[in-house]
Amino acid sequence: MADKAKKGVQELKADAAKTVEEAKKEVTKAVEETKKEVTKAVEETKKEAAKAVSEVKPVVEKATAEVKKTADKTVKAAKKKAAVTGKVAKRTAKKTTAAAKAAKEKVEKAVKGTTAYIQYQGDEFDVNALVEAAKANYAETYKRKRVGEIKLYIKPEERVAYYVVNDKYTGSVGF
Image (cartoon, rainbow, N blue to C red):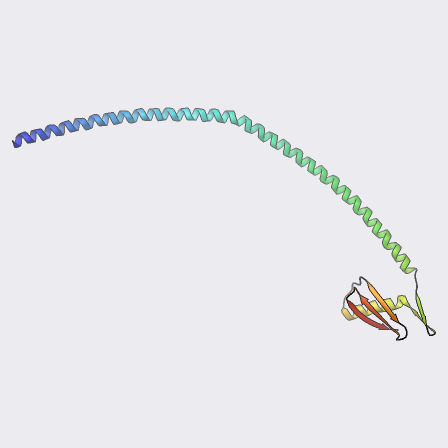
């Protein structure tokens, strides 16, 4: 019986080996067919993609050209506008500067042409000299050079002129 069992096992092994061989052949055949189908699908996809690219490429190129053209027009218009604006600004600045100079000259002429004196108990005091003395005292006391506005309060009975510079700094000068 052992021989019969061995023989049966050998037959089973042989049948199993045949079945495995047949399965291998079928799997190999299926893999080859699938490979062919996949390769075919990939090739078709490549062709479709190339076709899509060839259809889209001219549209993209046209759109790019239009964008560049529009951008060039916009840049040219902006440069032109900037040039015009710059010219207008220069003219306006020249006119404003000329008007300011003229106004300054008028004020300087009016101030230079004006002399004020205070007469008190037989004495005479030059107001312009008092203003200059107040400015000098301010510069010496506060070590500042710029005098924007000066207000002078003259008290002839005390022989003193009080001043306020730029609504902040105060002092006095005698005369």
